[in-house]
Length: 397
Image (cartoon, rainbow, N blue to C red; front, side, top):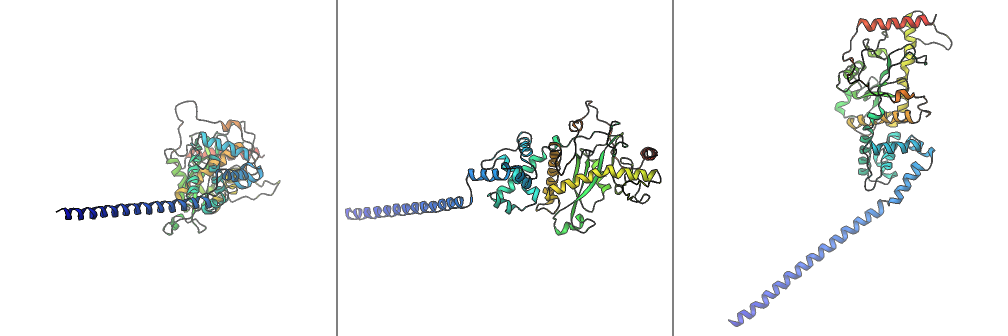
């Protein structure tokens, strides 16, 4: 009995020692595995990521070093850049992150919009990962869209004190409306919907602008195959869409075929007049109206030209889906209005902006004015257009 008990004790002790040895070996293997993972992580951070000071040096060389470099890379100079950075922080709710500050957010976004560069190229230039660049870009686009309440002003009708000869005849006019096509990339099953008359997919964007080249309304998202008149009807029928008081109107081209809101003559009855300098061969009232109206309406084409000249993302298909492209277009319009107000002597926006229009807000009265909600031909606006053409013809004699 004693021999069996004495022989069982060494066996139990040996089993316990074996279990302890196995546990220690397992713990040792776990420690080695964690060391290998930590060394790999440190090696990735050391070879790819830069320090905070080096990132700030990249932003300094790109933005704060000189106005010339800042304008070439970001399409605006240092002073407007700093003001826009403060506006995004105060009103756009854009905040500094752990590694990326607000000015780097804005620099990355403006560089993408101004040059239409891929994500992987921006990640190499700014030494950021592709995921960080994508998050920064989407976050900044959302902050820019939040500024549209500040930068998309309400239009002011043209009064009798207007000195510009192009607009002096159009009393009560709010501006001009037209559409432009933005190239986009879509799936194969959607190319037929978005294909324009030139054969490639586009997005038909409708804009309304004032005589001082400020865009007051934008409606993106429509297919390139949609007609301008259909888009205008949609804009008027929306709850927060285009608001046109009954006593005011916009100027449009003949392709819109609207008479109630924007009186114009048909393109088939009045041919395009090409006039040499110093000569005005107007033979009737319709020709006089058709000669003066495009000169004023051309302001919307100037806005489109400035937009596409400054932001390359609007000139060629960008590398985003249709929904993100719509947000990008709105952000570019917000930036256009901001630069038009802040830099009136810019090469792309050489226009003197009146202080009255920039500070235009809603009427003091709480009752909203009656607006036009439907599109159609009426005798009142047809008579208004004819009388306006007669007045133009009489002023030439």
